[in-house]
Amino acid sequence: MKHFTLIIITLITAATTAQGRFDDVQITVEKVTDHIYMLQGAGGNIGISTGKDGVFMIDDQFAPLSEKITTAIKTISDQPVSFLVNTHFHGDHTGGNANFEATGAMIVAHDNVRKRLAADEKTASAGLPVITFSEDATFYQNDDDVFLTHVHHAHTDGDALVYFAQSNVLHTGDTFFNGNFPFIDTNRGGSIQGDIDAAKKGLMLINEDTKIIPGHGNLATKEDYQKYHDMLESVHTAIAAAIETGKTLEDVTAMETITSEYLTDEASAKSFITGPKFRSTVYKSILENK
Image (cartoon, rainbow, N blue to C red; front, side, top):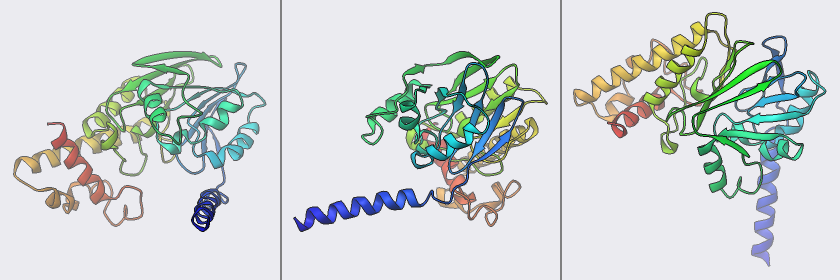
């Protein structure tokens, strides 16, 4: 009985702690066009399209933030969320799925997103995508042709870019970290070459006037996106060359010069992905995909 009581207390404490770490999070709303907005809080950037067809939403951060996110959405629209697109399966982009599903949102994602969420007992019971696609899908919402396209083995194995054609707005999910080194989830299908190819594909969709909502970071321009792509290619090339000359993982992880042109190790020390971590990930990804 004492053991059972201890388990219950531990679970309650964990739940309280999880909720508590979001108590001070504020959801900000940034206008991108006349009817498209970017919401930021904790986790991935949210895209919102408003209009006569309802709210078309991209990603939803963490479950404890759903009420705050809903309150923020109500400041820009009195319509319900009709569709919710997951750009990939990570919890900071899909954590609110069950909450928004309960209010009537239809969840859309790549096939692999549903597979990964369904395989996890924490997310298998509710909030799964009910519409999935393997390569491309198009929605016609709020006077936009909304083009969803899968990018292969980039940040994960289930990433999608979302492009609002008439509004000229692109949401990249976590295939683009604006101002920081990217997290490439090589354990779940991601790769450095796939991330490069995703940026190439995104750049082909847009022009100089496109507004870009990255997975993380501030609203971006094509110039920002191009610099990110070029950084990925440069780092890939440098580390591939280092591998060919016999450099070890430890050697490359310590070679700050490979990435310092973009962000020094000191500047990235408090980031989710530091310079050494990024170099290590790229090294492993190149070897795994040879």
